[in-house]
Length: 193
View 1 (cartoon, helix red, strand yellow):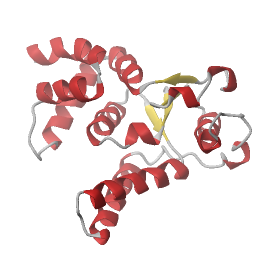
View 2: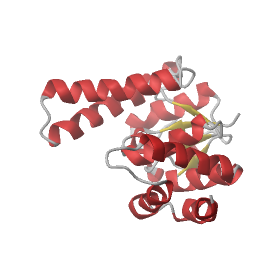
View 3: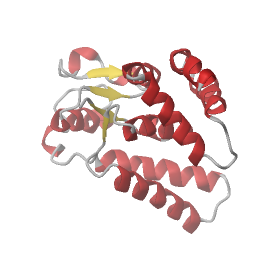
């Protein structure tokens, strides 16, 4: 199965994360991450709740809950043993080295990130693609549009605050995250389903 490392910037926006991970639940790809990626996600998630005036303990609990859910549902996603490659790729931002190291050790075919400029293709091993989340989501949905639509429908069933239909969630993905191609792939299926 195709494996992809999901960078923190892909995992942090909640609806985007939930859609991309829902496609993994449907077996369209295998997500990968490292403890370093999860630690960064935890910090961002905690900060989000603090900015929303949550008590520090509540912010920590919510960030913990997110990571616990990710670990539970994707118990084979954690890549270990990447540390020896950290710092060996010469990336513009040394703080991104762990992402490439995770991809190499995890056998990923892609790194999904919004920080494309931080991953120059000439510094990345040839077997690892660098994809934006929009491109990755479209490519993944295109593999099996019916399963991708089912992933969105399952997400709609779980998405209760506030409730949204699959069509409404698709509209949000297109509007918020510019997933226009995903909309073109899944829209006709959802409109007839």
